[in-house]
Image (tube, rainbow, N blue to C red; front, side, top):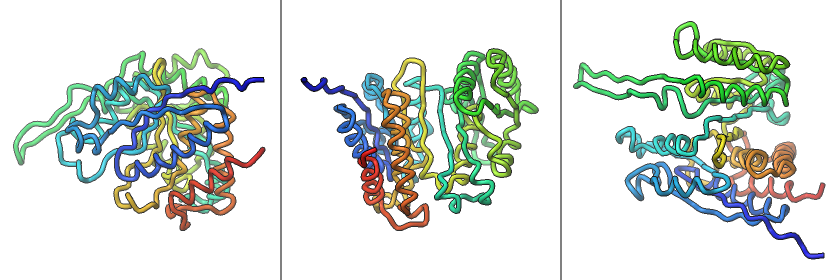
Length: 362
């Protein structure tokens, strides 16, 4: 019997800045291992973004590159930014490339899971009895809100300068992310906490109205509303109460970074950005960490867990996703630790530990 034809998957790689190329190299090794076990050939198209693109082309993301990225089956982004590029015009900073990528791919739903590994309870900033309950996912709206609202700008001279940004959402933008969060909750513990600032912001009042209205279709899911300041306090006070957190762009950005302290390190947090008709975008939540760039110290686990999300949401490889997650957990259980987790393994050594467990039979 002849072997089935290999499946070809086209992946856009955006290493970016700082530790980005290091964790991307680790992620590519994992992809090759996945391919070998699943009869898949990964084809890679690599593009510059962020500071690397500014240095090479004068812009943080070239339109022609964005058009090619859209043609891929999935996109892996490592990290963007660094002090070197912090003083330019807003549209010429690395983060503008990231925002342009998200908008250009129309990936409006950013999924950021945060779950404690039992072996890392002592690494959490919480007391052990609180830390062991951390198991949540944030659904952050990604292409609206104050990051994209117009008008925006700055004016005036020294001593009289001012700046302004606009927080804006449409009903359709809110409804589509709310629907995704409720659907996800049905597969989890059936509880959605919608986070807003409806006591102050008209945008949040609309947010709450639309989320409440959409909830009519999900009577089997519990819905709660929290103001964002209270939500932040509750995350560190009683994280076990949260299952699915639904929130807008700015609040989601802040709360998801707070979750890093709950699980022990931002080097453990993956993310997936999804849209209706676009390749998914997968990236670690951590930044470019320029202070350790080039030293081989970066934790690759968030990249590995992001690739697990890619397998689950874009490549229809749920078994591979579960295998990656088990390999990460097993490596941690065996004592593998990078510096951010209090250990002494470098990026390459941690990568080899995870790949060894991934390749084990069973």
